[in-house]
Image 1 (tube, rainbow, N blue to C red):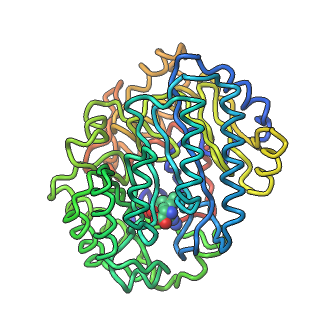
Image 2 (image 1 turned 180 degrees about the horizontal axis):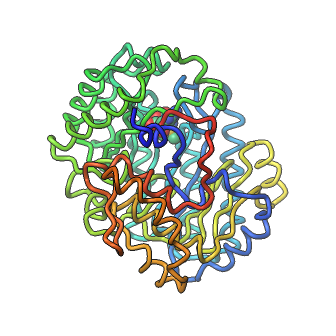
Length: 448
Ligand SMILES: C[S@@+](CC[C@H](N)C(=O)[O-])C[C@H]1O[C@@H](n2cnc3c(N)ncnc32)[C@H](O)[C@@H]1O
């Protein structure tokens, strides 16, 4: 196999931030988080991310920060503390600044119940005032979406839903411990649309155990028939030493690197033949969807939720493990729910680590974001726009040489451009601009 493909397969981050979270450090704590909140300009809208790390059962494949709970009490207590954390955040931000995006992720955020969600959302309205056009999104497990829940979510102002689908084949669903028949997903889509939640995203996966090319194509075709305006297609990341639930996956059933690459290519062809356009890495959208429009116009952004049309400079993460993004850098809450709870109960932020950006980091962050969003970047122009001498980028540009020789990227002396046919190799190009990334072999996930 081509050595570079092997490298992409093994070691490259997906750059939802720069530097990536493993490079955060403990120098950044609650005081820094508070100071950075204080410094957000008073008239500037912010975005909010709420992490809910609970599910009714754990799926074998899941790589997310969540755990199974059988009782409601810890979930209710968590929701109350989210209100407490929101009050702390609002005290630093001040009132009526506007919120442009709200995202509920997990886990299964609806496990909080609509009463709890309603209470938190009321607090957001009272304390921070969402804008008129605020996008309010939630991740849903289709197995738990009744008609009543869909209506209640719409009543709460939620206007976008992301459905965790993965694959429709019952054999694959058995292998990943997540049984949800196609008809169930069809019914959920109808319920959401009837309730007025029409902006839909489907999460699909390739590289799953027992998943053949035919399964993947059939899943994509059945998805297309339901006409969601966005589709995410993630490569299954197998990290059983880190995620114990993945030890339930039979490794002998996992497709190899070559099979995964073929799956990505055929999936993209199938989606594009149906009129979807590729957006960054792993994402597809109908041409009129704001994500596709932003990609075409060069305004697409990348953050911890993936790709977004959100232009807010500040994204505030609430809940255990949540990451916030500021002009000055990143902060991350304690991932241990008990420690996060203890801090919030003492009316303190639960920030445990983070990263303060240097001006050089900002240059590299912007170059990487542009490559990951639009496949094109002018590194020297970005450096100059940040008041940084472009010559610091020379070693990065030199790292591109073997990739240029192999046709994965083009460089005309100014502009770095990834050809459309090499889109899925974009991380290999981005990594050349990452000074934190070490090339030594390491334990890695399968994640083309
Ligand atoms: C944060 S999860 C939460 C979704 C929701 N709780 C549900 O049950 O459908 C969102 C998505 O991450 C993706 N994901 C989860 N585990 C993954 C893994 N090991 N590798 C790649 N993607 C994964 C799946 O597509 C999943 O739908």
